[in-house]
Each structure stands twice: as C-alpha cells, then as structure tokens.
Image 1: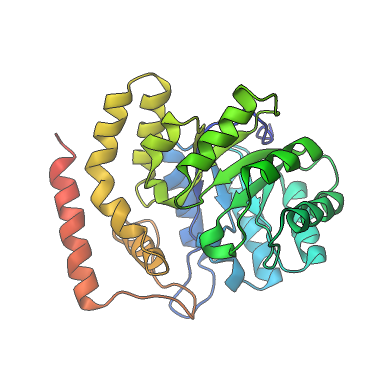
Image 2 (image 1 turned 180 degrees about the vertical axis):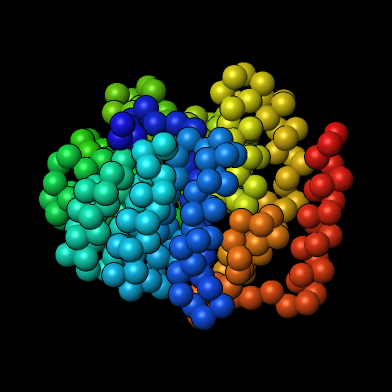
Length: 310
C-alpha cells in the first residue's frame, strides 16, 4: 500500500536523511539501507531525502535518481518520503520531481532559487514551479534564508498558499523565525487563510518553542531522531513539561550539531559511531573533524549517555 501523500494535515517527524559516502566518495548504498531501518526503528513519521543536509547539491543527476530509487525501494511504502528537488534549472527540478512521484514519493520540497528577492519574483517563480510540477504533486516550501538568501514575508507566503492549492506545507527554518511561524499560524487560525502543515528544521534547536507556536512537528536531521519523535509525541499528547525535559537532555548535542557548515560532519560522525553508516565523510568540498573535534564530541556523547537512564 502506498504511503499517504503530503497534505495540510501532515504532522509528526519527517527525518532528513543523510547521504552516506564511501571513503572514495561514492554513494554507500549499504549504509543508506541501514539508515532507512534505523530511522523507521526510531519511530519517525516519514523521511525526507535529497535535502540540503543530504548533500543533494553534490550529487550528479544520475546519482540523485539512483539514490532516490534505492531509498524508495528500501522504504517499501512503510513511511511517506518527501524528496528535495530544488535546482537552479526548472527542467531538472521537474524531471526529478516526476521521477520521485513515479517512485512513490508523497510529495516534493522546493526552496526558492537564488535571486528571488522581491515578493513578485518569489510568486512568479513558484507559479513556474507549480506549472512544471503539475497540479497533483504536493509541494512543501522550504524557507531557509540562511542558505538560500531569499527572505519571504508572511504576506507573500500567504499569497502563495492562496494561489497554489498544491502548496500544503511550510518547512520553517528561518532563523530567527518564531514570530514568522506565529504569524503564519495566526493567519490560518484567525485570518481565513488556508491552513497548511508546518514542520520545523534547524536541527530541532527550537522545537519546543515552535510546537508551542503552532508547528505540527519537525523536518530535520538530528542524529538522535528518537529525541525528535519523543518530544513531538509528548507535546501533542499535552505533556509539555515532559517534552521539554526530554529536549533538555539532548540540547548540548543538538546545539553542537547545528553549527553552520561544520555540523554536517558532526551529524555523520555520530551516525557512524552509532553503527548506522560506515564512513562519516562528507563529499568534497566539505567539513571534517580534527582530533580535538573528535575528543569534544566524545565528551558530549558520553555525557548524554550518562543522563539518558535518568
């Protein structure tokens, strides 16, 4: 049975999958299979592949499609999968989106391309994206101006929601952006704008506050997905203090992993140490850990292990 498509009601934890590589820089498909099983075992609602932290921009088009097919086959419909299809070329974006949906993806995620620096430009760009995708492909808007350098106002986002029915989700990772999240949610709760799902990124660094402001869950790639799952579950069950207590235990590592640029190397090294991937290398050019970095990470992980039983 195929997994459900993305919708305005989507909630939970959609883990951003790493893309594992061998020491020679090739995609490590065996480690990718272990990642799928690890994420599912930890209770994620869904998975997102070929995201920015999945190093999608470093993959050749044929590699992206091979990784997509391999991951979708391994998931086998057990959980929904979102595919990041952002690309400077609209034709490339549309081709990967089509391949994704044919492989069984539940929707696609698109960040605005560089240079869309006015509300009019952003709206025009997403009109082109939606036309290229076709009306039946559910769309998640990735709002990550730290990387894209494209800042979208609440008013502009709401206009996109009203203009394009297939836009069903906001991946919120503006930073700082809590006020934007509140304003988007208020517009749907009180202003008559169609409600869309909001899942939050940034390594889950502000997850309790984002949930309190109306987010429906997380779409991020922290190397301890069980924390994200438990925090969201407790929060949605009304146990706010319990959710924050769990979050607090993991906060030092979440903070350490969220360092711009460098954090991906930390995340992959944690996954390696947890026995999930064989090699922690990022694809060149990319960050790597020094001996001091390794010692620092060991201490953080040891302190986490000491606190977990309590």
